[in-house]
Image (cartoon, rainbow, N blue to C red; front, side, top):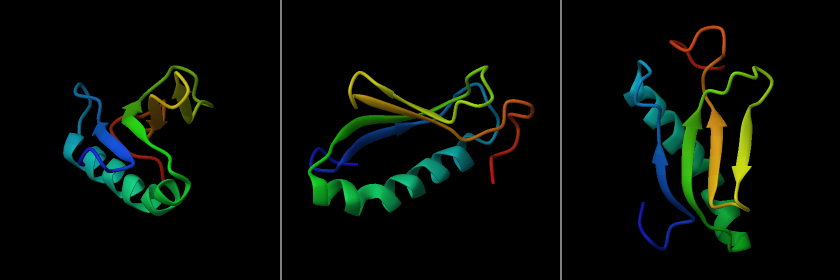
Length: 83
């Protein structure tokens, strides 16, 4: 994802299984939101997978949009992805 792209980079959890699948999932999410972000002139430097202890937390905006963290895996079984 280049410098003119609305999402700078995507990162997955390196200590979890299925990293390639997680990377594909985050890139698909990025592709789906790209048109909306471009239309509004929004830019997020980093989108990152995270796995917080709080099972109800699905995502968080860090530092006013400098980083967006998204849960891809359930807390009870991080070897699978949320449907």
